[in-house]
Image 1 (cartoon, rainbow, N blue to C red):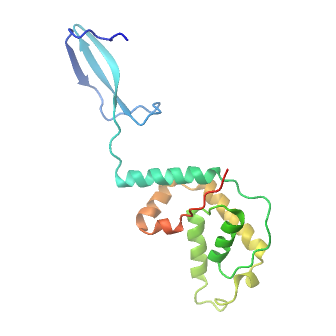
Image 2 (tube, one colour; image 1 turned 90 degrees about the horizontal axis):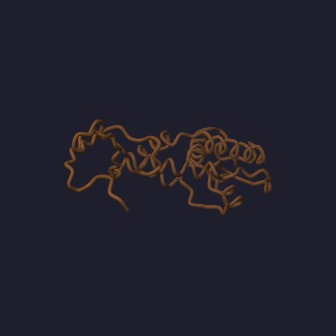
Image 3 (cartoon, one colour; image 1 turned 45 degrees about the horizontal axis):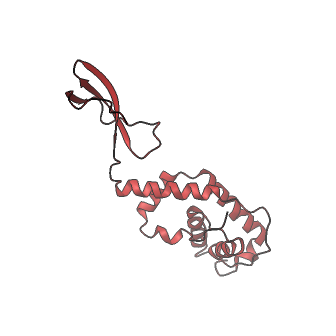
Length: 179
């Protein structure tokens, strides 16, 4: 391997823009351009820096991005297993996860919880939901919402929600299907 510059030559490094990073770089290193003075010649070269330590916000955004990309890969089932009896929306969600062996999106789990809370105080609060809403319609509704959350949710939005809820991990399913 040949050296680009002989050791005996004087080299002055002048940074021209330390804050710009290379968008075409696929590595986790960031680059910045510097001017290198070798004897009487000035050359521009890109210098790689090791990645800076991620802040907790940056780490949460990265986790949300990985989570969202994973959820996008999961196919929505097209064949319905059977009619699922249920008394609550969250109960229906648990049954769907067991029957299909798939996790539900964090936002779907939160929505099912909100739907259950919205029933508190209504006159039908204690009636099983499968008497009020046909189980096939309810399941189809959950899968429609799930598809929207998997395909259209922003990882930035999820990271904000996770940051404001220290118990967010309770609504992230740990069921990992085989693809």
